[in-house]
Image (cartoon, rainbow, N blue to C red):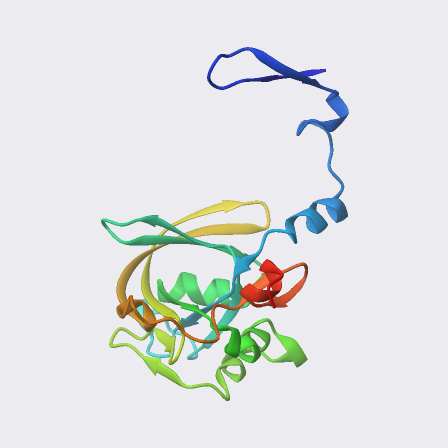
Length: 206
């Protein structure tokens, strides 16, 4: 049995069978299904080494990926965290370039998310097709019309199993975030229950 304590009184409020505790082995399929209930905002992470950033002698590369694991870390200085699979084609490019873009998508930009997820076998620069992109002075690609775009410099990485937690220092912000009173009629693009969704889908109001 595992005792559950009340945070205020430190008294035992319940005894949970050990098999239901977090110490028990959790099946991967059950974990994935449970995590699908967590609605997440969809972002596209862009990376580029097309100007030879960092003095690395390699062919120009431009690629990216679709992500939902993006969170703010600090306001002063402005920093955010992205979780990236180390098997992603974007990972070595990010390490070489030491900079990346985070684009918060609207519900009308699901096709962009699909392309950057590798749908149809798209890879590299092919993922940037059929969407309006803007390149910042330091070589970060941001999506025109996104709810928000963050141009970041790589600050730190933490490697854990298959993924890396990437800390980015935000150097520039674009998009609707600069106009707080503006609300995009399409709303944000979400990922929920294994598929793209809108706020109305999650709330059940639409």
